[in-house]
Length: 571
Image (cartoon, rainbow, N blue to C red; front, side, top):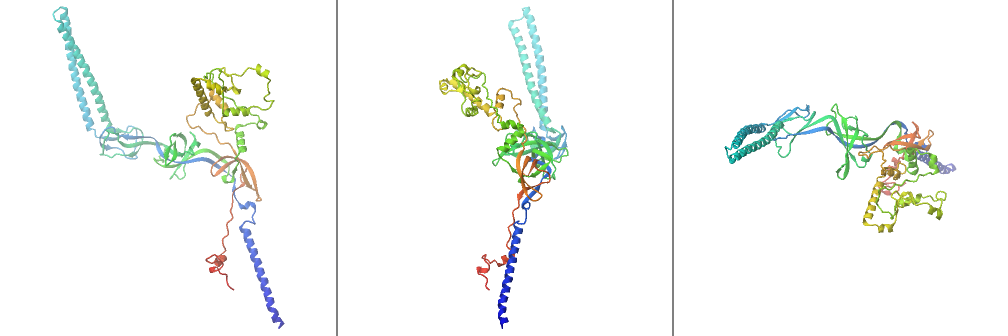
C-alpha cells in the first residue's frame, strides 16, 4: 500500500526535471542562434564589406550625348525655274567634283539667249551704219572748212556741218551703251542656260534627294534644294554639354565616343571648339562642343546618336580603391598641404612665419585725378588690409621723435602729390568738396579704372585671394602671356589627403592616411599609403533581420495573438 502512495509524487518530480531540462536546451539553442545571427561569433574584419587594392586604369570623365554630322557638305539647289527633266544620281551615289547631277528644261533659257544674240547683231549693224554717217559728216565738215577759206560758203553752212558731226558721234556713243547693256543681259541669259545643268560642287556622297524627276521648280522667290552632297571621310561630332560640366572642358583635350551598334568600339579625337551661345530647351542650358573624327571605312553615318566622354584626367596602371572606402580630409590643413606641394615652399620658411607684404599698384604718371594741393587717400577694404599689415612691435616700426619727423621729407608720388604709405595718395573729404566738377569727374574715372584693374587681378594659387603682384605686372605692361581667346587647359588637380580603414590579416581594422590623385565617381587613384593586395573597408554589412519561425507563425491568430480570436489555449 505504501508503494502505491509514493508513486505519484515521484512521477511528478521526474516530469518537473524533464521540463526543466527541455527549457534549458531551448534557451541554449536560442542563444546560439542569436549569437550566429547578430555576429557575436565573428571578428571585426568579418562585419565589414571589404575591397582589395588593385592596379588598373582610371579616368575622370565628363559624359554627354551627341550626334554625327559630315564635316563638309553642300545643299545643292536650282538657280533657274523649270521642269526637272533628268536626275543622274540617287541616294548613296559617290560623285566627283564637276560630275553632272541633274538637268532642268532649257528651252526657255535657250530662246532667251538666241533672242539676245540676234538683238546684239542688229545693234552691231546699226553701229556700222552710224559710223558710216559719221564719216560722211566729217567729210562734209572738211569741205565746208575748205570753202570757208576761199570764202565760197556761208558761216551757217559751216555750223550745220559741225552740228551734223557732233550728232553722229553722240548717236554712236548711245548705241555703244545700248550694246553694252545688251551684252550684259546676254551674259545673264547664257549663265541661266548653264544653270540648267547642275554639277557636283565637291567630291563626296549624295546623302539625300528632296526633288523628283519631272517636278517643276520655282526659283523666283528662293532657290529650291534638290539634294545634299557630303564628304563622309571626316565626321563632326556635335555634343551638347550641360552648363554644370562645360567649365571642366578645354580645347584640345582628348575625347572619345561610342555608338549604339558599335559593340563597345571607341572613336578618339580632340575637342576642337566650344560654341559660346547655348541652346536652351525646357529651361535646360546646353553648350555645343565639336570635334572631328576620321571615317575612312564609312562606318559612321549621318545623324547617328553617340555617347561622348571627355577625358578630364587619366592614369594608367595605378593603384585604385573604391570611393566609398575613402574619407577625404576637408579643411585648411589639407588645402595647405596641397598648396605646399604645388608651390614647393620650404617648410622652415613657412614655420618661421615669414610673410611678404603685398605690393601696391603704383599710380600712372599721367594721372590727372586731383590737382596739386588736394591729396587723395584710398578708402575701403584696401586701407583696412594695409592697417592690419602694419608692424605693431617697436622693433619693426620704431617711433620717431618730432625733430626726426621734421627732418625727414614727406613721401610723394610720381605726380608730386603727398602720398600715404605704399605710394597711395591720401583722400581728404574736405579737399574733395573743394574740387571743381571736372576734377571730381576725373577722380571718379581714375577710381573706376582701378576697380576694373582689380577685377581683372588673377587669383593666387596658394591663398585663393587676388594676387596683387600679378595685378601690378599687368598694369605696368609686363604681362608675358597674351589674353586667351579660347578655353585654356586647366592645371591638374593637386593631390589630396584622405583616410581609409585597412583590414589586417588577423581581422583587426586600422585607420591609415593616404594620398589621393585622380578620382571619379567610382574609383580613386592612390599615390601613397597603400600597397597592392591590401584590403580596405568599403562599407558596413548590415545584419539581416531574422524572420518569424514557422511554428510561431502557425500559433499566431488573425488578430496577432496566440490563438484564433485572441483567447488563450485551453488545457
